[in-house]
Structures are given as C-alpha cells and as structure tokens.
Length: 141
Image (tube, helix red, strand yellow):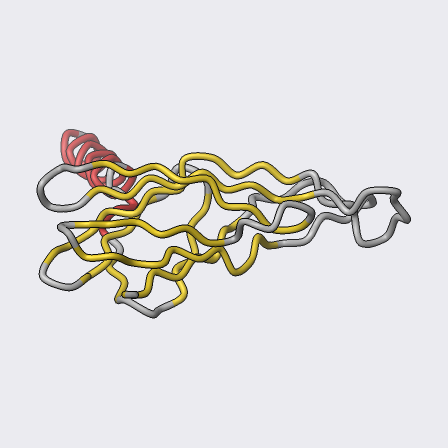
C-alpha cells in the first residue's frame, strides 16, 4: 500500500513538472514563420541577441466565411518583444480592413520587420470559436 501511495505521489509530481513547463521554451529563427496562441511566447535567435516574442492578445471580428457581411472585419494581434537587455517594445498588428499587418521594431539598435501573416482558423458561424493562432515573421531590415 505504501508503495502504491509513493508511486502515485511520484506520478503526480511528474505531472506538475510537465504542466509547469513554459511555452517560452520554444526557439525560432529569423525569417521563420512563428505560430503562437494567445499568451504564448517564443525566443527568436536574432542578430547578436535573443528576442522574446509574446502574443498578448488576439481578437477577431472578421466576417465568418459562411456569412455575407457588410463589413469584412479584422483580426488584431497585440505583440510584445523583449531583447536581452530587457527593453520592451509593444506593437499592434492587424489583418483585414485595417492595413497595418507589419511594424518596424528596433532591438539592440538593429531594425527588424515584424509581420502578421495569418490568424487561423478563419471564423465560421456554424462552429464554436476554437483557439486562434497568430502566424508572425521577424526579419532583419
């Protein structure tokens, strides 16, 4: 009985360790498509520094694909970038009726383009809203 309790305790601790693993353990490269969900982070290996890229909010008001709308709507993604020195830059990117899908960010004096390439899945009125993913690309200017 003690052995069973011991094994259950070990199994529970292993489960807690796995659940506490951070999303920021992901690593991406420049010029690579980075897919992140809301509140997810990744480290991007940039020129001479590592950049932590975090999606802080995804909001989607695009017209569902199975509906005819008067307005096409837009998908907004709020992103934070932090370099090794701790300098934080926040930017809002948008797809659809807004026309600001990219922004210039400067990290450790090096200019980069941050581009929002997609927000998936596209809304459908007949299906519940699944967890959305923003596809981003960081490139050196």
